[in-house]
Length: 173
Image (cartoon, rainbow, N blue to C red):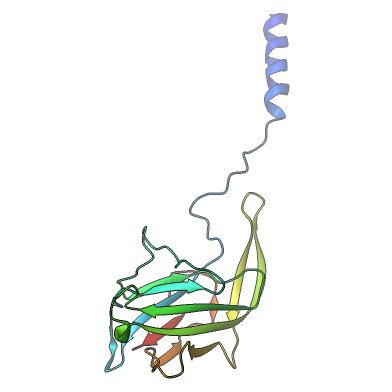
């Protein structure tokens, strides 16, 4: 009886020092990306697929990979913003890789924002939330001024980037 009691006491002390594992759940919302939807300039209520769009970050040589490819053929895309700066620039190249340079269009979008670090949990750490600048949330320039911009209009739908469940920007072309 004493041995059983002593064994139970030892086990109780052994397991009392255990604590919950600090594992960040995969469903926990972390730093969100900027969600952009593309629309038809002639019918602003219709989503429009881009054709062979690639998005290349400033100072990078390769495009952002989406579903295993750097080419995007969809009406919505999510891109990461820098967590250590208040400005991020991307080259948006439509018809990327086409052998006819006359149909390849490039615009450079510079996004201006402020950042706030938000504590998520001990396991997950911090996430960054962004707020697009209310006066100049973006600047659209073409890399070659002789070429007309393919992005004709940009609308800010939600300036606070805290999740990826909604569109933040709408691009019309």
